[in-house]
Length: 399
Ligand code: PMP
Ligand code: GLU
Image 1: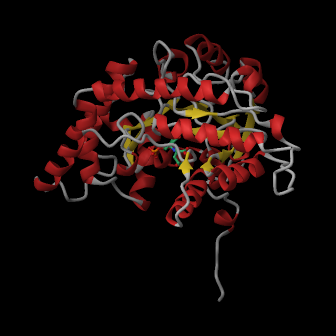
Image 2: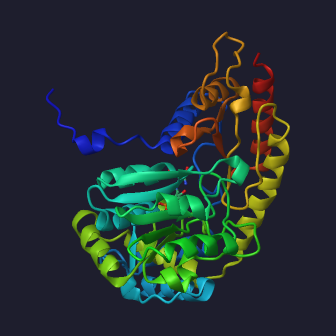
């Protein structure tokens, strides 16, 4: 068959988080007792009052197209959230709601990045950033920070990476895949660099805002020097355990919000009307569910850090947010499995752990950092204990 696949898609990598999760689901369907620590999503059901709002939306016939950027009532609720929780002033016209933070990020990149434009991405970074920039024909410029610096870039690194072609810097805090959280002082130091480059936009992925074990959350949008060129992306997936509902948004300077809306109007229109109503209930309703889930993640963080530290050959930091552990596993590279094959890379180690320990993790290389693994601990205490003891046994069997 003569198939035509575009160069654009051919050059994209497959999402490793989704691929590993699918592999683990297939193994489970085949009867293998796999613990899936690959995909990152809260394991809690969506809170009851949010589900109720969605059922009511159907009964109330919120079943038609909505404005492309989302219901005005939802955008107003988002503006209130940004004002009350983050101290940011946005008008509803500056908000565009899309199918998850993923679409919101991709929308912003496609609406602002031209061929050859450079976008700075601190690594390790979530799998999709680099691919989205490539989709826009931009050039990802990676800055690397390893575990010895808690995976945080320095102001000096940022300054050194900026060139006349730089159009954007992306930052994710709390971070996927490392769980690192930039302190207000660390953000301030980065802003002190950015204020010297007024042509550079800032794309702040704040999707893990509420899964934060530090004293508070500082939005990058709250620094006056860069506020006028900062785009915030956030959504309900993580804070309200609503990954399947697919609601996220960008809050942007008006010309960018208009461009994003024009783009989205041509390729996906509005996000689901029913999910939008559910998201509105999430923002307007009681917030104790958010705090309770965060507490559960903190407990699990403590548990997994304690257990992971007992695994030979792993180096572990203490993540301050999100629900990921990103151990350095270079101590195990070069070892031989009981079947006689040598483990050369963290990818081969992830495969060995899947096959021998039946625990699905993601190779750090998918996030731009060979020699590390990512484990999502958004799962029960029992699963965490079992997974870590299986990994420990599988690692102990390496020669
Ligand atoms: N940004 C980061 C850092 C994420 O981890 C995720 C979830 N994979 C997203 C954005 C996208 O989230 P959503 O489910 O809202 O599309
Ligand atoms: N936040 C998740 C992860 O990183 C979702 C999967 C994805 O969209 O990549 O695993």
